[in-house]
Length: 406
Length: 120
Image (cartoon, rainbow over all chains, first blue to last red; front, side, top):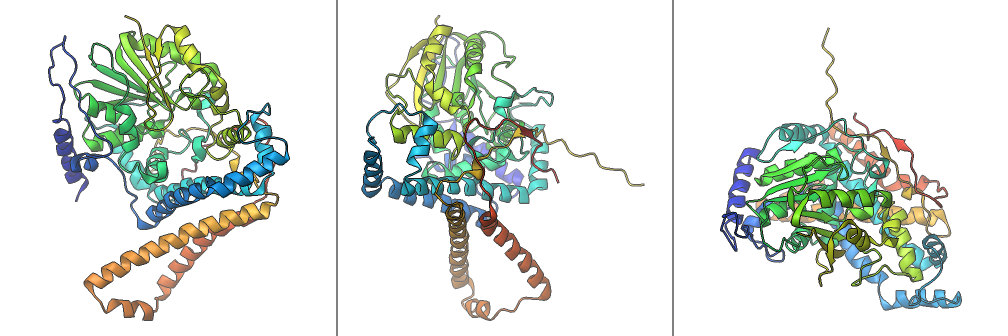
């Protein structure tokens, strides 16, 4: 099948997808049309729209190995023998896996890695993470010229538009190799291809091959009480996996993705165009996004703030507040921080050690530690939002809803 | 004189290189390296096993006699060269880690920027 034929099929699938509306009144004073998607039972048309495959069997098999390794070895690391052994080690030090500790995160990591079985498990998980990125990057860069050509062609095509800013001043905090991804979001021209191919295969035990993870939580993002959703902004949209489901949920809305990494946002646009979805993307900073005041009905976020230096949080939250219309909502779907009554960061030795491991090594998230210790919900309140905490945990992480008062 | 083609813009910029790959978890860096190596081998072995399963299925469906030909195959010189390169690439992927020298990664995360990933 040629690329053109594939796009036709996808556009047809997109049309079929948007037909399953639960409300279709377009009148201005009526709730917006909204489509329900069951992430656990995607239709054949929906599966055609989403997901990605490696071009070759070898890279696909390597990532298949990553999926299996995490499933099997993750179970081994969490079994009773392993837990008992760790508890025995900490008891000998006068500590316990169950008690909070005054040790800081690095001290907790240094202590627990003296327990060699525990250290070996961390080693294995970090190794498999590195392998996942390495093999994916090798596969994508083997087709470098072809993929760059595809991006160049896509940059200028629709249905949605792409706004690139080659002069964007990218702050240093956004230039890290987050998750161990080589080059991070800004330094590898094929970063979007690398990210999407790696995460759909390697994250969440291989159960997100068709973006089921993203569909699950975007379906639950809080909509305004009046049900009117004319414009949606998905901040730090990355490869657009959390942006396109918002267009699928609200087919009549103008949907934007905003992303600091040009390689990521170019891929996001490429992917959305292939899906036949009219989603717009802007290469830019959330803290200086350029959108008008009171412009959006919903602002959505998936796992951004823990990747942003906390010194920038206040400015970003104020910008989110500014671009939302009165009654508009901000859905914060992120890792857990202080100030959330439903879930708190762990203060045990193993919890602190795991967080240090995540922020410093395995998942390499340099700003996560400070985010975890900050009271993010309080920052939302101070900015003027009305904050609520839903009873849900879909898609991993935790959820906080914020509404701009009318 | 041929016109020099201007490098295509790829929008990649300098990034901050992480240092997780210098971390040692166990008491002996060689154990860390061996674990890296063994996991890498596991991925390679699984990829080969999976390809074999695909091949055997296809052969079985299409031309049953081909399995015997696979056993008796002798590559051409050109193929031998290509396979030698493939072998060396594979060894680099899996075994180069054994030569890794660990460094101290305590304290703050790195902040020095490096150029974008090679454009060659």
